Image (tube, rainbow, N blue to C red; front, top):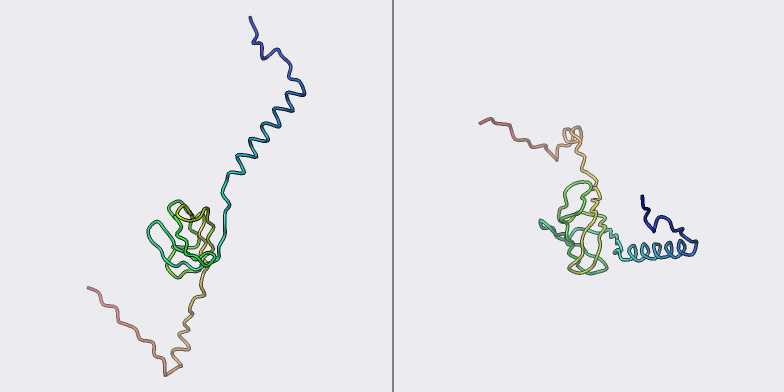
Length: 128
């Protein structure tokens, strides 16, 4: 049985060092090509089916949201949010949109019963 010639040769330390330098250079070049993720704490200016408009550095920025992750609910106009996005101009894409919850209104029925100025108005339920 015949052996392949590249299996019988020994790898010298010089070749191994050169190969590791080449691999490290390739990995560094490929990882440096990624775009920087920017984070903005902002208010949502406008919402469509596939885009969200925010204000970033005093400029209106339209972000593509087709492949983004939404956290804490659906995005609506006027919501406060933390938006992680990549790119600038027309190629800007939202990565993660985290909505900042607003404080809710708590209505105490005891206070409404005792207050004569504010009356609790309800509509009787009718079945059709």
